[in-house]
Structures are given as structure tokens and as C-alpha cells.
Image (cartoon, rainbow, N blue to C red):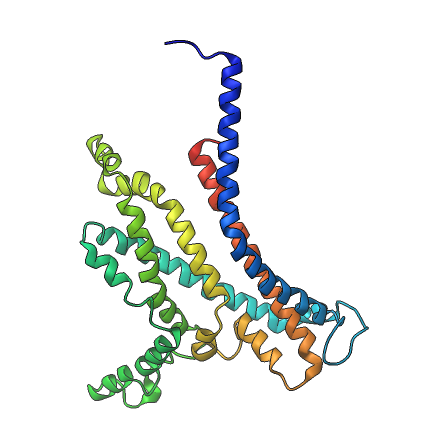
Length: 306
């Protein structure tokens, strides 16, 4: 076999780099129309909202440019409580969904195609339909309360624990679990079925217990799928409006509900503060996505040894 000369090696490397750049260019070129539309709609809206929040333009007149709306929003004690509640719901719902989805995906790993189909049943159901179902089941006058009354477990609907519009947001969490567990399980099933079973067979042949095989072999190979799906779920739950608005606590409210309440306030002088709250919510959501993406990127780099 003839040796490759340094000049030939350099040409091969240049050709590989050109091919790589062409691939990147084609991929980003195909994404460009969607990026432009999103940039114009979302970016344009953000710029307009920012100009209104600082008083550059607005329904009450323009010209008094200041950051007082942001100071008022950040110094509002209700903002901190709402932010804490939004993080609490997003962290608990995402964490529970992740753990239960991993367990369910492992249990359904060897099931037939019906398992994937079953996980898709709840996906097309609108959230408002799920909210109506939670209210019919868990409200003080709901089906479960009536059932408990009929069998004598409670003497009136007042004895039934408050599970909707409660301070712990139990109804909100149950709704998100009902909706997000099938979604995450569907993704993790696809990841599991793409893993070469030879790795786990080799670990078991070397004496690893089922738990050791799962913890040291299967789970690390599922990590990218877990992080990606949990990022989607966390970002959605953190910025969700309709579920905490209809099922959540009234005091404090989640951050999206607080933004809505401030924006629909009859006092128009609060409008810049409401817009500032909306921009802060958007920035927090973007920062969370960037942080998650950074974790995923670092994980992939460590796996590839770059």
C-alpha cells in the first residue's frame, strides 16, 4: 500500500473541509426561510414591545424614555412569588415526568408497535379538553368527590380535599403529568430502540446486575434523549398560560398569568410594566433553553472526546 504524501494529505483535508462547509451551507440554507419568518414575527414583536416598555412608543404618548417599567416589574414582590411558583411547577412536573417516562419506556421497550401508538393518544388532545377533564374529576363537585360521598367516605363535598385552584397546584401538576409523560415516553422509546443491545449483553456477561447495567450502560446512552425531551417539556411548562390560569392557585399566580393580569388591567398606566414582565418572561425562557442546550452540547462533546 503506497504512503500518502503530505501534499496529498493536505488536499484531502481541504476537500473534506469544503465538503463539510457545503453540507453546513445546504442545511442552514434550508432553515433560512423559517428563521427569517420567525425572526420577523418574534423579533419584530420583541422590538416593538421593548420600545413600548421604555416609553418610546405607546398609547399614553411617547418621548419619556426610561427603564422605570422594568424597575417596577422587578421590584414588585408578586413578581418574585410568581417566578418561584413557575419554577416550582416546571421543575416538579418535568422531574416527575422524566422519571416516570424513563420507567415506562424501559417497561415498554420490548413491546410491539402498539406501545408507540398508545403514547400518541394524548398528543392531539387539546390542553383545554384535559383541563375540563381534570375539573370534572377532581373539583369538589367532581366525579371522584361524588363517588366518595356515595360510598360514605366523605359527608359533603366540603370534606373532599381541594385539588384544583389549590395552593400546591396539584391539579396543574396532574394535568402536565397526564400530557407530558406519553410525549417523553414516545421519545425515549425511540432512543431505547436505537441502542445496540450488544452493549447491555456484554455488561451482563461481565457480571453486571440488571440495575448496574441500566445505571452504567443504558441510562448514559439515553442521556441526550432525556435532556432534549426534558428541555422541551420544561420550556413549555414554564411559559404555559392556560393550565395554571384555569387550574392553578389564585395567589400567587404563575408568571404568564401575572403578565396576562397586568396586561388586561383597566389601569392603562400599568401597560408598560405588563410589557416589561412579558419581555422578562421571554428572556428567562430563552436563557433556560440556552443553558439546557449548553449542557447537551457539553455532554455530546465529552462523549465524542472533543
